[in-house]
Length: 259
Ligand code: DAK
Image (cartoon, rainbow, N blue to C red):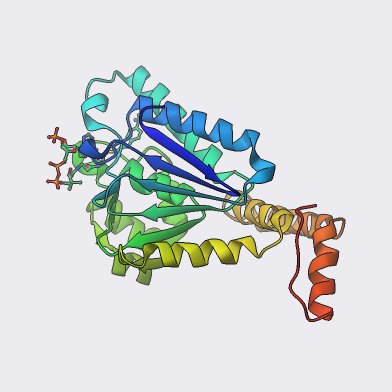
């Protein structure tokens, strides 16, 4: 792969979008390789506990879909690119493991949409987040109108989408759009702590919780609660639930096996 580095160390997978000269903008080759990286991760999913995604360098996570490529698209080609882009981001959102976006700089347009498809966002202090598509004669098309609105509410989403308002890491943290902010010096430390926390959790319960939260945005409350009860009941069939509860009662640390 030319634009995506996938590194799997023990039970942590790390994707780096590696197109630094174009601020890691997503063209169709990058999207294809991202799709291939997800294939590899899915093949090895039972060995992986956490996935991280970042952009190469210290300036940009992803500065959006590639404008030089998009400018040439016909409506039908745009539809193909859009459907493909949405599908790749959906695959990331639906992975059974937690996915952390390391928002290390610009997260604009498709870049913010990619970060929104991840479960947790850790921003560096220089991060700038925005959906400037309307200034290009377009609207956010990799799920941004849907996921940003669900993440921060209609009012903030409208100011960011209609006025193209870009926000810094501090404001994004205040809005709950990112979960934490780090300097480049303490980024690894903060990321390490997040990963450590996630690895303490029961893997099957994490997967069930992700699916139930996904349902909260995609179904009515009655069906969502039914799904929640079904997932929770399913947890009672796992070794991990017995282990988690026994460990609490025996005042020791739980050792989860993901079964
Ligand atoms: N696409 C292509 N190249 C980009 C790019 C992008 N989104 N962003 C940056 N680059 C390139 C620049 O062209 C420049 O290339 P060279 O001139 O060196 O060859 C290089 O990266 C460095 O950028 P700058 O020289 O501009 O760097 P600055 O520090 O001055 O500015 C910036 C950084 C991030 C503020 C600026 O580059 C910028 O405003 N970039 C564009 C940000 C943006 O508007 N992003 C949203 C793109 S629209 C769809 C599906 C999805 C989407 C749309 C449609 N369907 C198929 C319909 C999603 C749309 C978007 O994401």
